[in-house]
Amino acid sequence: MANTLTTIDMVARESLRIAHENLTFLGTINQSYDSSYAKAGAKIGDTLRVRDPNQYTRRTGSRVMDVQDQNETTQSITVATQDGVDMKFNSAELLLSIDELSKRYIEPAVKVLVAGIEGDILGSLTEQVHQLTGTAGTVVGTSGDISALGAARAKLNQELAPKDSRAAQFDSVTMASIVNGTQLFFHPGSEIAQGFTEGFIGRNSMATFFENEKTRTQTNATESDVVWEVDDLTRLATGDAAVGNSVSILNFDVQGSVARNVGEIFTIAGLFDCHPETKQQYPHLKQLTVTAAAAVVGNQGTITFSPALIVNGAKQNCFTVAGTFGTLEGNATVLVGASAASLRQNLMYQKDFATFVTADLPLMDDAIKSVRRVQDGLSLRVWQGSDIRNDELLLRIDILYGFKLLRPEWAVRITN
Image (cartoon, rainbow, N blue to C red; front, top):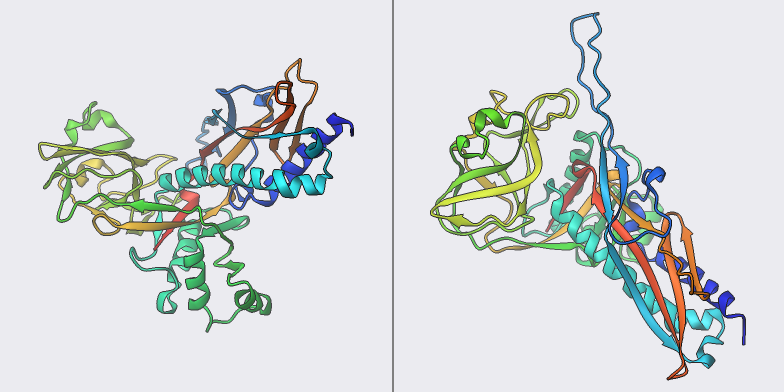
């Protein structure tokens, strides 16, 4: 019999190769973190840290320095999920060549593992993204209209997302509609050929396109003719005056009794988006996403949302006429999409909008047939043990990971 450890090492390398090839989404987002917090032999609950970019305010009309403190912050990512896939072999099966072993066992196992992880993460991150383009209820590309793609690109530019390393994830129905909608437009020869032979477009609107059936579907609450109006801001726990510069929860008068679902996107009349550096008002309203189910009791409701609204200072991210939240009182919200609508949410983003990290699982002291391999920040462990009762070899492939939304403004949902 071949050296077992060598076989396990080959299984680990082959598992890692297959995982990389099938990371349609995770391979396009940030996978780096502060290495000083790396964990060798990590356990569930270990924490890694990612540095946020610094933000400053401009000195105007004076040559006198107004020195600002370095307000460098980090975000913590808890490595909280251990997923895996488990198999068993008899002695004869483990003697197969690595190619045959991969084709029959490793490839289908790792594909299931990666697909499940990607689906969970893509859905969770999309739910937290607050920006959206497209017409709810209409697939992008219908009647040749691909304006949602350009609008998504514009939103990323307005939020100063870097213009490199942008990508977009579309389900196959949307991709087919986009291909059909762009067939009369000018394309490079390679894009035309790919559209006809493969049925998808590789690049458009400064982003690389990917087909991914795991994009999220947002379901709106059934709330026909329900109106949500910003209520007395003094009802906030700390009072309007003490709320200061940041709000992520607002009270509403509700003409109805229907809740809001997590992931729904809405706007508030009079609350505008602004340029991240100059703080000048943009012409469009600030979009917000519901982060906690909002129940209604006695025609009163509270919505917890993201991003937190900041009306002044270096981190200002919205604009009101008077520069306070008080001007929003009595203003109504507008929900994206119809009541009870199910809307496919494709995603365009710059890679640093989110991060995915893996940590090195421990190799147990008594596990002589255990191997850990790392490639481009992706760490997998393969562990084999024997079952003497049934003359079988048990094999498990494990990954310990965490993920986090870092810059939600660098991503845009494209709705159908």
